[in-house]
Image 1 (tube, chains in turn orange, green):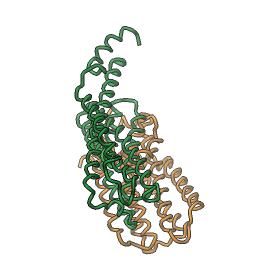
Image 2 (cartoon, chains in turn yellow, purple):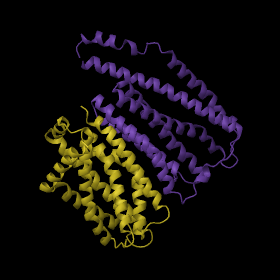
Image 3 (cartoon, helix red, strand yellow):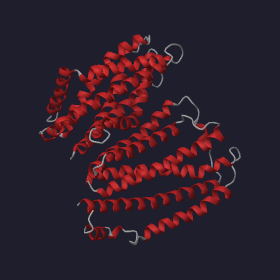
Length: 225
Length: 240
């Protein structure tokens, strides 16, 4: 298909840039580690209800990571009119969106992969039976968050508020997928799928699919003029 | 602005001036006043006092209609937003943004009247019931829509950006409701809403309330859309 190759090229450009500068992953990774450490001081990390607290803290950290990474990734396109270059290229608008989405998923995913084991050790969690579920929750939750975030970051970067406005746009709309991700993560920390976990997973799948379609359909209007 | 531009400005605004005839707007305004004049005595005096909740129950006659307008206005934002993206016409943006502003006022009213009723009847101002939670999120999406508009000075870009948020936000609301419902499914807070058959007098008062608020919303829309048009005409004349 004609939009796959340009999308991969755009994602490749972002990844190459990141490999050479290590801007996003280093700063965001350290920031997220700090969030986790701060949260460990503030919340009870032992006893009853710990799984719920841990899941909430983890997703707050993931959300911050995604927001920071996506804001930075779109700010790069704004510098030196990079986005104008992309728009005048023959790449379809859908490819630009999918390319940026893929790069944002990669950045957020790397940070999450690094932070997850550290988090599990620091909070002395034992998700022995729940590891596949944990990975599933992380993947589906991140996809939903980053899909909405990539669309909105293309808008936020062209406003007077710049990156400051991105959380205001992303957070209210991403609440359902975040609730679902926290619920499934909580089940994973508790040892595995429980009653209702399948419904939450389905909700994430539906959310991701719906907003992926909406984002692809509306992204061309965001980049116009 | 030099004095020479003033006559041109005058002509351009002729059709949207306050003196321009708009019988339907006057009619809607008059109907709103008349309906409120009927609704208020009905809600306060005519409708019977609730046996369990007492007089605080009467807040229901403005709370529920305001909540209905919150959803209706958001649907209008959605339709207007699709119009913006399909046609690129500023008319649609006037409709969507006006509806969002008015909807924000009504959702705010819902979030204020709800706790005022909740405190005497439930004993708490707030509970994380699915309806309350999703209504709070609806309000947050409305507010972020208006904040976004404030951050984009350029009209056509502002229209497109807020349209994207209007569409995403509207589609999000049913998912929010579903997720908050499952999230709190272990708490039996739903029972308070299951009032079964409503006495006829209460039902009639509620329906009058819904009619009143719908006409009020329509009136506010005509005023707000017209103000938007005047702003637009002014922008064109001044910055042309």
